[in-house]
Every structure is written in C-alpha cells, then in structure tokens.
Length: 104
Image (tube, rainbow, N blue to C red; front, side):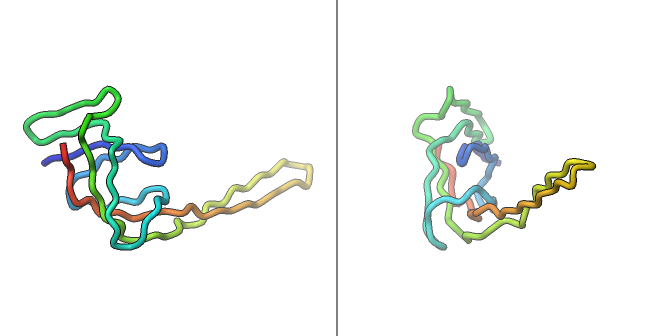
C-alpha cells in the first residue's frame, strides 16, 4: 500500500490513493485538480524515501470535491466574580479533496 506525507496549510497529512481528506481552504473550484509538491515522505510498499526536508520530484495530485465551512467553534472567556464574559465563534473555510495519484 503506497502512501505519502505532504504538507499544506501548516499541517501534515498522510494519504494513499483514493483517500478523501479535509484541509485548510485552497484556491480551486469543484472538479479542479491540484498538485502538492511539498512531499516529505513517499512509501511505495517496497521502499521508503524520506526527504530532507522534501523529496525531490515527488508530487501528490488531488481533485477538489467541495469547498465548505467547518462546524462552528466557540471561544468563551470568563472571569469569575467580575461580571466579565465574552463569547466569540468562528467557522474555518475548508476544502475536501480526493487523492488521485502519488508520483515519486
């Protein structure tokens, strides 16, 4: 089972062909293909190639399935006995991808 670890949006993701993942928003419409070249590790089943810091020539190709907003996250600040409380919420912009291929 071949897999790769790549980096985008300040996070690292371990993926195989056919996986569906959710990442921080990237530019693209539904159906577009995007290529990630920040590949940190590639495992082909027989051998593992670890980059220092990146594997040269390796790419991960994915298809954009959906652009959406994540569930709301609530940040609640409170100081006891002071009558102080603040509620702030936000929803992150996310992209859902389907991994099409891993090129080593």
